[in-house]
Amino acid sequence: MPETNTAFTNGYEFAQGAGYALPEYPFVEPPELRTGEAKRHAVAIVGGGITGLTLACALARYGVKAVLLDEDNTVGVKGASSRGICYAQKTLEIFKCLGIYERIAAKGVQWSVGRTFAGADEVYAFDLRQQQTHSLSRQPPFINIQQFYVEGFLVEQLCRAAPQDRLVDIRWSHRVTASSRTRISRRCSWKPRPAYSLEAEHVIDCSGSRSPFRAWCGATVTAQQGDDRWCIADVRFKNPPPVERHTWIEAPFNEGRAVWQHLMADGVWRIDYQMPPHANPKTSAARTWCAPA
Ligand SMILES: Cc1cc2nc3c(=O)[nH]c(=O)nc-3n(C[C@H](O)[C@H](O)[C@H](O)COP(=O)(O)OP(=O)(O)OC[C@H]3O[C@@H](n4cnc5c(N)ncnc54)[C@H](O)[C@@H]3O)c2cc1C
Image 1 (tube, rainbow, N blue to C red):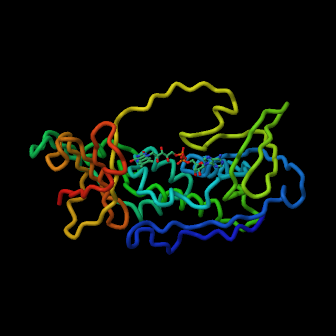
Image 2: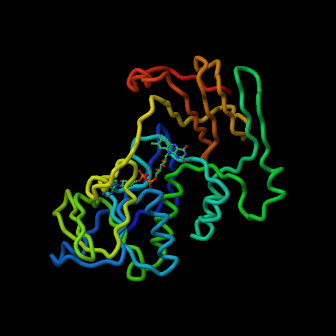
Image 3: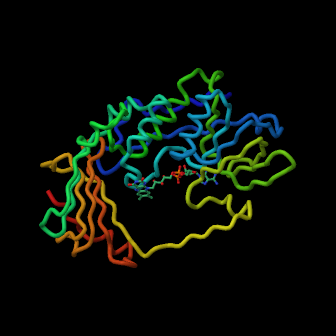
């Protein structure tokens, strides 16, 4: 397996200045390009998001070798806000098995109190610590952390061993552009560097909601796009609110529409504002939003 010179996320401060500074992983020439031969792999995972990286870590735990291909060269999404933020107990138990739970617990924020408001009235509240008395889990009910941290920890876990001993060959900047079934394998090609093919006993599609595999496989999908629009903001407060999840079903400061407020790592709060149906993202982004203190 080639040396990847992975830019580890250790020591990265993700939330600096105006946005997140995500790690960048280098492109490494794969053996297929060097030799011109279509190498055969046991498993090819397409997509290095949280699904693909978790799967790769789980396979490695069972000693299964895999090649993972991602079209991007980083975790998270460049230029975007946080995405997934809230990791529940069962997920945390899985991360414990995969060896990254301690890092998530150290970086993330535990919370247990949730409050729901309609206007100025609190209409519902819960405290998950009460439920914990009946739980046998060693993990808390929830930890909040930005998704790219979890992805970064998974990458580092996969790259902990010396390059020659790694079970998963992560290939950044490798876009899968085609996939076809042959008798016992699939053959894939990659762009924009010189295209090459590889074969795999199993190809696992983890390329997200816009996966091209459905078209390639001829799979039918029944999906509907709703008219719900959300403006997502990651902010820091000078006077931080309490470490509680707050939900407004009717927020007076958002024209009576919903707002979600969660604390994440680095003292960053994630505020989700529900927008009017069919809101124009360009004009919405230009508005000044005032988060509750
Ligand atoms: C703004 C926003 C906010 C969100 N908030 C939340 C939240 O609060 N809570 C929550 O649970 N979820 C949230 N989500 C959803 C969550 O981020 C997704 O469910 C999650 O990222 C799905 O993970 P995934 O690995 O399946 O797909 P993705 O994260 O989409 O990863 C797919 C990967 O595949 C790669 N890829 C795609 N096509 C190819 C190709 N042809 N070749 C090679 N690689 C390819 C991409 O580079 C990417 O790395 C949010 C999403 C967004 C956009």
